Image 1: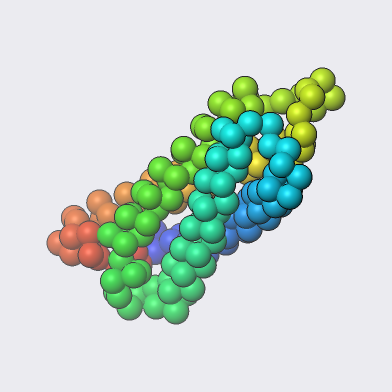
Image 2: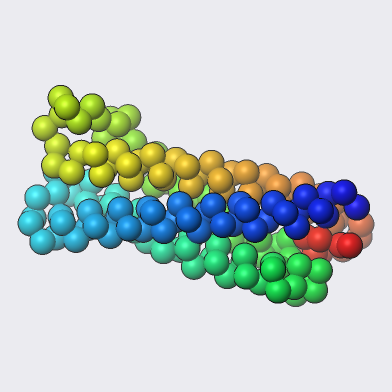
Length: 169
């Protein structure tokens, strides 16, 4: 089937992007957390808490995008539990919820991003980058979850339910 070829190409790409942007977000959040704790100069407790949550979500994303990406490359048609539509759907749903919360909360804390030349905010550029990469992760996760939902519909129509494979041929 033609869709299977697209899934074989697209899965490593989208999970590679999730991994790459997750590593960038992880580095930003870890650096900001380190600076805030070392110098005790977080603008407020809200931004500190949201940076911690971004750090957790980035770690979650890096771990699961690497795991699902490697398992898919190893056994795309094997039909194992971790390569099923259901496992992808559950993990991506949680990841999407986390990134939605991170991106929205950082955006709210910064007031939609700051003009760093006019804002008197410590680590302003890094916080803006944290916000931007959070929204990028949200977008990639949204694309992935929509794709998995469509593949889930195909799997249900084939009679395999949500335990069906992402790729059949």
